[in-house]
Image 1: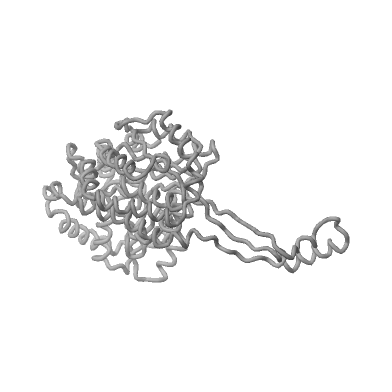
Image 2: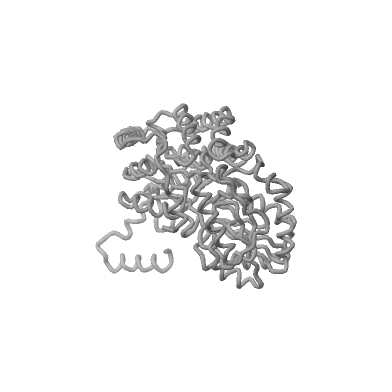
Amino acid sequence: MTTIEKKLDQTPDITGDATERDARRVFEKQQKNRWATAQTTAKERIEQLKRLKDAILDRREELQQAIHQDYKKNPGEVDLTEIYPAVAEIRHIIRHLENWMRPTPVKTPFTLLGTRSEVRLEAKGVVLILSPWNYPFGLLINPLAAAIAAGNCAMLKPSSKTPNTARFLKSFISSLFNEGHVALFEGGSSVSDILLDLPFDHIFFTGSTRIGKKVMASASRHLTPVTLELGGKSPVIVDETADIPKAAERIVWAKFINAGQTCVAPDYLLIHESRQEEFVREAKRVIGERYGRTEDARRTSADLCRLVSAGNLKSLKEILDQTVQQGARVEIGGAMEAEERYLAPTLLTGVSEQSPIMREEIFGPVLPILSYRTLNDVFRIIRSKDKPLALYIFSHNDQTIEKILANTTAGGTCVNSLIVHLANTNLPFGGVGASGMGNYHGYYGFKTFSHERAVLRQGWPDSLKTFYPPYTPKVRWLIKMATRFLA
């Protein structure tokens, strides 16, 4: 466990703990109900999703208040990053669910003449969704919508680091669903451990790589499949052809929204050495225009949310200070206010690959800037780290863009933009390697919570009779011909 992870993991059970008896009772109740739930029609599931969507919009202000109490997030940012994605996802599912639920016919090979085949997507059963604190509403509701669409029962566990939002979610979910269909458990890590001991049919986890490994180990005891949405150091590359003013506007937005506490936030910037000075100047201008031109103005800005805990703030400030002590320069920011859990939007130059800030995912409002001369330098730096959840490219050279895509890997990529690939419900969202496994959003979420069942129906004629024993010379010749020409 890294130093930062040790400090960030000290989360007490600050809400009402669920007992093991409660968890097993609800789990058994959902197991009994899972077959009836799996056989619901598209119309019935759509009605459930419409009720969920309407409740989100009806209780929008209550949700805004809960999230603001947890880390002073602006209501507009709550709408943009929590409510809009959830509502858009549900509406997309509602539009397409009937079609997704239809069996998909597949072609029949000549050797199976007389059969017809299809793939049916059926509910997995009872699923567990463990959601994080950084987007405590959307990152629980989006997978839940997919699980409902696929016909599952679900048990939910939000993070205890955002207790006000968890309390809201408890009320919200219990008002909409019978616990035999969907149930939510508040509490800390001990509640998660209790839930992970149960033999779920699927586990969906969003959080850190370290906890993801623990979830996967627990799931292995029951051979439970998992979807892990993790994180990592997502790079943004700015080459010599980039439109620097536009790049600065978009990168500043993506980095400092939610105070940098976003799994797909740009973690560090790799910029061609000929454009670094211009970028720093433009980025400082954008920060001033959006959040205040002085440090005092930024500290009191209602548009900058706070870090989720004092422990997160302290750890980030320590890493920032160590990086500066080793030669990095603070171009803007660096200030903190412990009581407010405030860390200023910060740009760092003079950062090396060995700097403390480059060792782990930052998950805060600090952007290290490294310059490069050749793309080979870029590839070496990126490949020296775990595979990232996202990679961003700013360039107007198509050959450069294709070269970067061919020489790197990431869960997802935007070209001349950041983060917004999540908003396209037709794209899969997920990680690769240490940044996760599996994906969701739109149809991909429906598939994640479904089992692809192969169904073959035998009709007439029965071509397989040709290959039945005894294996006479004629039968062996027919098998030989089929292997050579028909396979």
